[in-house]
Length: 333
Image (cartoon, rainbow, N blue to C red; front, top):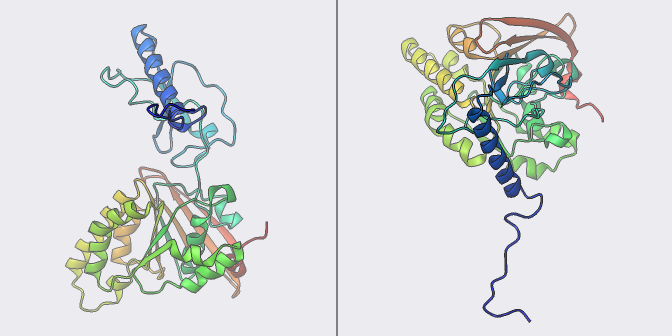
């Protein structure tokens, strides 16, 4: 019989293979490894992604072989092409483990996918990017992306717990989202609960929502993706809007979007493919742009994909052809 005063020992905190125990071992080993290397004057090597400048690891060992499928956890670029090495600058003795952002093994990043092979093969969407979709057909891509983002990573999705949609043009079609969810065989009620929609009706409400309210909403719903549909529609269609005031608000919204994209993916779309003063203010802050235009026949579409690098100075453009049904039908697996 167990002694009445003897407390039952808890075994969950540091059971074999538990995350807590693994974190303890990693911290312990990391601390003493770095301390030893610093004490013996052995230089550490930094390995980072040349595309997004993300520091991946610091180690005294040379990494000469990277599998061709391994990607940068932030931008998704293949590390076999983008991995760079440099000597570590002077170490901070007060916190020797601060610079070890990732363990030596590189992990594949989850990607945001349209589930359209021709687009996904040339457009690698990762967390921490601003993406703009342009054209009348961009709306259906937004709705398709919304459902794909909710799919678990094990099924090729983005694994976002929720998706936040700001319907700035009052044009989002929830029934189209339901259609895509059905094609994936998902639970419709569960999907609808995870799509949070907000509809501002003035440019001031939109600016206030994006700048002041959205950061708290993102934390509350733990989302990986924010969608702002028809972001410039109210600025272009309201005849009473003053140009000077509109410029200020567009600049404010653009700055806030860049800040939000630090930890989430921000997707915006422009239904009108005609350039405007406001779109010229918005587009320079975009990382990747997809423009969809009609082809020679009714069912043929041209998709122009622009990939910009992190400093927005270089840009590569690719054009692919799609059928209209490619946007509407989820491929069978």
